Amino acid sequence: MRLTLTAVALAFAAAPVLAQDAPTGDAAAGAKVFNKCQTCHMVVAPDGTVLAGKAGKTGPNLYGINGRPAASYPDFAYGDGLKELGAAGEVWNEADFLQYVADPTKFIKTKTGDTKAKGKMTFKLPNEKEAHDVWAFLNSLAPAPSAAEAAPAADAAAAPAADAAPAAEPAAEGAATTNP
Image 1 (cartoon, rainbow, N blue to C red):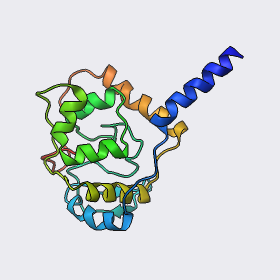
Image 2 (image 1 turned 90 degrees about the vertical axis):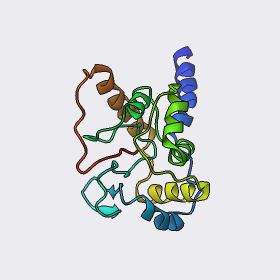
Image 3 (image 1 turned 120 degrees about the vertical axis):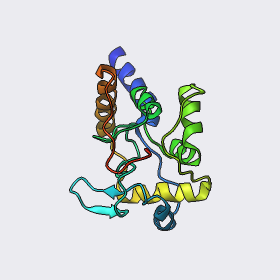
Image 4 (image 1 turned 30 degrees about the horizontal axis):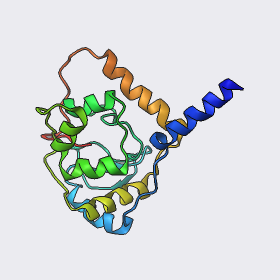
């Protein structure tokens, strides 16, 4: 009985982290605002279907960003600050997305506590309504993973960071900056 109560308590404690709230923005408006993002980003489904964007390869694919661990898109050269956040268990949610796109470097400094940290994403989307709308748009293309899917993804993202030896990061094709 004690084990069951402990398991239930842990499940409720983890629920806010794993379960993402419904987006609060307007997905249709977000599709228009995403035009500002598509210079660097695309939204490509796992089957290779391009859902949004053109040829943006500077930033990582934003498909399924809601609930995805920070700095976890495969084979992408993230900056040290985002990699640190990913290793610490940062998972993208609406509140953090809004803060990040408003000022990526400030977000990384605040989250890591490192006043010298820098974000590689130079674009800022300080208009909170537009940021909410982009979040809703991204979520309309790829819903957040279930709790069962999110937990292994978080573990997988943290494991390589813990075991990785310092190595040169591969440059993203045509990349000068890095994004979420």
